[in-house]
Image 1: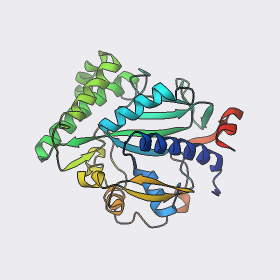
Image 2: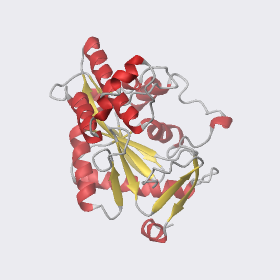
Image 3: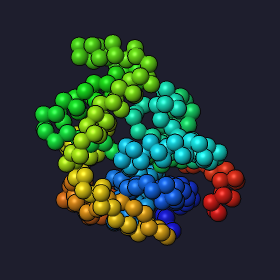
Length: 284
């Protein structure tokens, strides 16, 4: 592993966490998938995107729940499973696996961030309905309750009439709002629909202009036929036909060299700290 962006030790911590996830999943018959930018790095760089500062891994909802349960019960001395159930201040319906004994320092630190550790994003995959009108309704309902969370956390200031109406929902407990969003994203999991994806992402993809919901949809068959791809000094699991996913997610130029002026960490990272205990555990 080499790195000209000052991320070498950060990547070693992340790689160690990835190997732990891989081992746990193999031992328990779970499938996981390198996701989004991490998959892009695997295909374009056979490892980390050199300037990247986190990892994205996805699992189907049942495997996601099992993995989190194992991590909480057996690895709580190494990792903190960070989501709205373990921290009511957490802002979305995905999970971040934080490496205890580490710290990421940002250029613009949030004084309310009580969990600044190096992290792996772990996201659940749910079934999207086959009919377009059903997807539109599901997406809109998810957006409504996610907006209520953002209002509750102060990320959206209610000024327009619609946001002022939505602010009424923000009086609900954060955990309850998260449970409602989970219920909405899981409502079609009893069906074998054509597409699956991370349904709770309400942003817009900057590469394609599509909503995060639509941009993340992938054929179910891709998840049923995973492949192994080289990554640094090992191999990891990902979806079948990863090239099609990258074209869908990042557009037709996904494989072209990224402009040099944009090769910066995406999460405002200034530096990071790794405790002697973590260094000894992972061998750095």
